[in-house]
Amino acid sequence: MRKCRLVFIFTVFLLSAPAFTHDIITTPVTWNREISRIFYSRCIACHREGGMAFSLLDYREAFPWRTAIKEEILERRMPPWGAVKGFGDFRNDQALTPEQLELVTSWSQGGSPEGEAKDLPSKDKLEEMMKESAWYGNAAHAGRQSGEIIAKGDFKLTNSFVLDGLFPRNVPQSGSFQIIAEFPDGRIEPLLWLEGYKEQFAHVFLLQTPLELPAGTMITGIPAGSSIALLPAPKD
Amino acid sequence: MRAALLSLILALVAGQTPAPLPSQNAGDVYICPMDPDVRSNNPGKCARCGMALVAGLPDPVEYHLDLSISPRPIKPGQPASLLFAVHDPWKNRPVTNFQVVHEKLFHMFVVSQDLEVFLHNHPTLGSDGLFHYDYVFPKAGMYRVLGDFYPDGATPQLIAKTVIVPGQAPKPATLARDYSAKDAENLTVELVTEPQQPISGAKTQMIFRVKPADGLEKYLGAWGHMLVASADLIDMIHEHPFIADGGPQIQFNVIFPRAKNYRVWVQFQRKGVVNTAHFDVPVKELGNYIARLPPQPN
Image (cartoon, rainbow over all chains, first blue to last red; front, side, top):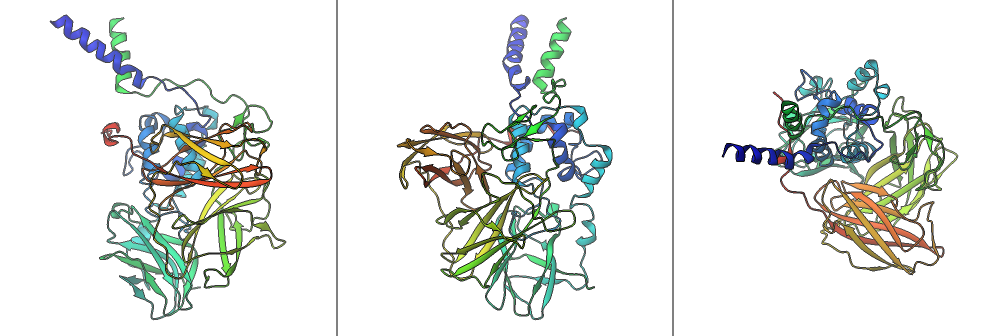
């Protein structure tokens, strides 16, 4: 009986093993060259030892997560930027570009090779890339700011306002919301398309260029029960 | 011996990180700027699109693309002038030197929120360093405008912008599977996918067959062009054929990012005429994703 059980366990091992053996490498994209650079600039601010999530700093740490990483980024759940790219322009944009999405997908699907050590970014470069992350310095924007306006529902500006950024508050955890500015002359500017924004990863959206909103501008598309802080541009 | 075998099996079953892989990239690497998966250890031309391979690997940084439109507000059915300005991401300096990609400096795609409007055209670079294009937005509502360009010394850029034309917007598209053969300008396009049911995050082979195939020509340096857009217009992907030789069968490989419905436009040129056809592809999710997550480290 004991022998039968051992044979059974060994057979299960043998049947299970191929799923975890080396994948065939079908991609020229490597961790050391392309993927580490993307992760250092977009993920490592949180995914590091002592950070708020498990570490993805090193190839050996990232490799077991390769399939989950691909699915998380394709679904735009990670990085948790929570907004659709190209609806408003943000200077702290942390969403992955189409090129970065393609590279990570190719790496994940193609056997996830490590590549050559000489291709890894230097430590200085790593620190520089990490500082590009929007999550650094976020705390400075988390509190109420002098001169900010809290917009709820369809909101009409009574005075002109130079908009520097937006900070969502109490936004529903799921759903898709397009926030736009309707100018008195009829033109419409896209401000922010929230998609999967999570309070857990609350952050500010800082415009690439401050936008002058004349008195009478309507801000619409804010989800019910939510508010958006309209952040003023610093005065010269 | 038995212990070593057991530990090997346990390591395999536990999914541990494999031993270091053999070198994938000996020596210099030459990359196709348009098809980043086409690389060589020797200089030369891309087998897929014919572009010269470039040495090294520039950091993949995103440039700024500003789109201004006049007159404002935009009126449906009225001419509008589109101006695209490109700035570098470091000091926001205007960028005026670009590489030719598929015979053009700038490729532009325009798609309306109901997915009824599709345009692939090419703004021209003016002496002011801006790309110009005159367009009539045919109806009110949201449009996504995709700019595809390649600044000198950078990586190719694919940047989406959003334009909202005031007025009564059309309802967003609701797509159902449509693989039916399409009669385009001077050929018919058929589609088969492998797998038959595309899965999000996994490769789908999209195999198009055109009839008749005599007189098929490259259009803008490629045997075909494809734009993939999700019904919500969040995903927009520009692809070129993976396998094509001027014959009737043209294969694109696509990874649909999400389990959504997608519209796929393809363009093929025959006897000087550009043919455009579209198909609708529902994409499903593969099983229980959570079950495949590795355990959280302590």
